[in-house]
Image 1: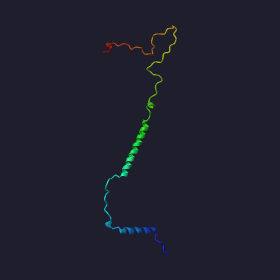
Image 2: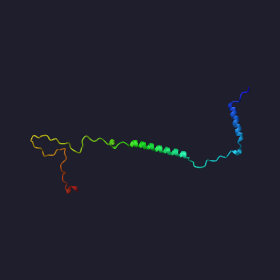
Image 3: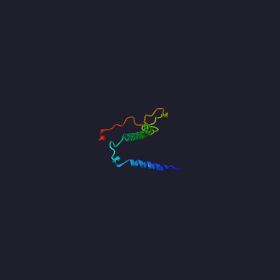
Image 4: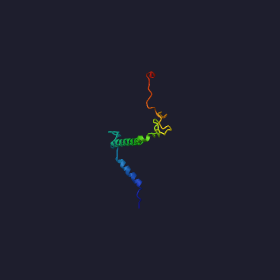
Length: 119
C-alpha cells in the first residue's frame, strides 16, 4: 500500500501547474486606475460622518445653552432698597399726627433749582 502525498505537496503541485499556464503575453502592464478618485461609498461615508458630527455639536450646544434665563438671574433682595418701608403710625401723646416727613422717606417734591446754579 502506498500513502498519498501530504496535502501541502498536492497544493504546491497544483499551484505550480497553474502558474506554468500563464506566460508573459497574458500579463498586462500596471496602469493606474482611471475615473473618479472618490467613490460614491466614500462620499456617503464622509457626508454621514460630517452629519453625525454636526448633530453631536448641535446637541451639545443645545444642552449647554438651554438653561432658562430665570435660572441665571440673581434672587431679588428681601425688600426694594429704593422704597421706604410702610410707616406705622403710633398714636402720639398729643393726639394729632405730625406733619414732618419721616427721615427715611423721600421728600414729596424735589427742591427748586435756580438758573444761576446751573451755569
